[in-house]
Image (cartoon, rainbow over all chains, first blue to last red; front, side):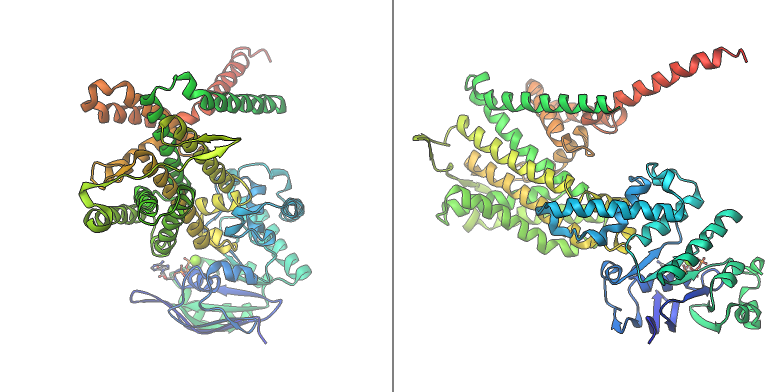
Length: 257
Length: 343
Ligand SMILES: Nc1ncnc2c1ncn2[C@@H]1O[C@H](COP(=O)(O)OP(=O)(O)OP(=O)(O)O)[C@@H](O)[C@H]1O
Ligand SMILES: [Mg+2]
């Protein structure tokens, strides 16, 4: 059984069908590429999966459980983590603090822990701190842990976004254009991060990416979206060669080929 | 670095000790001056109200409705004591709980909207509460007001009976309750869930995606904040002995605006801000009593000056001086390098 499935998933913004009747299955442990021209509904699809947006129709099933109506934090609790298309970081916090905030799930502090303060918390905090430093080392930001997150250059901010998402130790990682605006070196290291993660932890990953070369290198399977619908599904090579895909891209984003 | 830090901690501790001693001895210092003790008691009650308002700032919202929760607390306190036959302390807790209950019912719809919409909703709700009290003459006395709210009943401490019907003693009671309430608010802001508040304030969408129950946290915040506002109302009721729901009373829109001004002048980013802002502006209001009709202008000018020159409010002055000194030191350190170009 697939880890994550969508059945006839739809999202309308007024009259615009940003995602319509989308059936998709993601297998445990795979890296799925999601491509398509600008405005195809890729980000909207990720928003539906992580709960940032409510579906207008259809179902999302995660590990056999229908999560269509779950709030974002419950989905995060089930192991769905998200890297946004913009560099979403906590601007009042340092690099390390951002990752600590991302580890929220490991520190069971709910809204009511306002009232309790136990030694257990302190011990746990120390464990969490060590994990966060490991994560920063993993993405190569260990030397910058005390800088303000938003003072980092774009590429490092992108890496930090990934570290923050990983802090919750997710089962599924949703990456929205992780390579945008990165130079060759940063691109290579980000691809390495995604691959290592998948290889060593088996993290299932959905990557939305315009960089087709990267998608070819990363994913065994890709889905092409256009106007919110699935245009084709197959190996990235098949997808890129498909006449319908080329037509969808023409004029819009022809430079990626 | 750590030495200056330690110095600062010592200075802070010393300031707290001095403050505690001064507050404790205040009735003696003022030699029982009723006028000033009344002002100080009201000041303490207002500090709690402004602090409760500031705690909503933690979720990035501005509430214009806290006078509404104070009104609920005040009338609940009065009616529970006068008609419900309860004593002071249970009534006080119940007043806070009632305000909190109302807030938690309203929280869900309210917290779905943000920014100016939240502010407007809270403002209109507070006005609605006020008008309900105004027109429910049978229960609240309506525009005539509710007269004769009893003082707290006396307690016997170490064989001595303490009455709370004079401002001299009520001052201690009010200050005590306010200090406990502020400690709770402080714990709530700074202790464990500090990160969660900051996360929600910085980027609530990201916070949600990371598993933080954003709506839940906002609800808890709003509810606790309303509880504190209710307590401040309860303290007010038992102190003033009469309540009025007039526009010009402390439950009107004007008061909401004043509370905001107190908070901004004191500095909304600091916990101590509401205390400083409320204290300074109350004292200014007293000092300018002779030109009462110009008081709003005086307050307004101070607010404008603070907003222009001290964006972090009065509580931010030390931080501002520090950055200013650091800049100067940097400049003076750079100067010789620029001048001496030997190499
Ligand atoms: N919150 C919103 N309200 C209204 N329309 C929206 C909203 N979010 C997205 N859309 C519209 O839905 C369509 C799909 O947008 P989406 O952001 O999912 O595209 P995308 O595939 O991620 O594109 P890009 O490659 O540019 O990021 C677009 O036409 C967009 O204008
Ligand atoms: Mg997008």
